Length: 156
Image: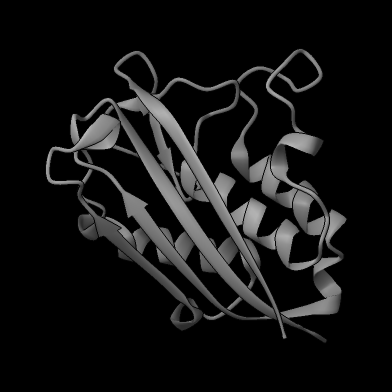
């Protein structure tokens, strides 16, 4: 069994659409070079970590080498190639969404379903939960949101 973890944080922006887990939802988006999908970014990092393949920024730096506003779904698909996804089996995915602004519980089922579709796995292998910060720090003040992802995989 192999395990990987991932983390991402972005500052909120009312000028950007909010994309989480590959779907567009209501709420303030994120300042980012890509679409700012912190769920897919942390999940991609966790998948890369499970196979010791560096991190998302190595393959998609936040500069001109990466197309501006690139879809995080496109980035995830590249990560799946890098880790040779067809040679592994996902045991489970656990995602913790950290925000004072976005109530993830209202959309966690939709996000889990979309992640299951993107990864071609059973939705029951994915857990998406949220935590607030009780008005503490940059997340608690509503200036940013973050995400932590943990992935367990085994060789197919």
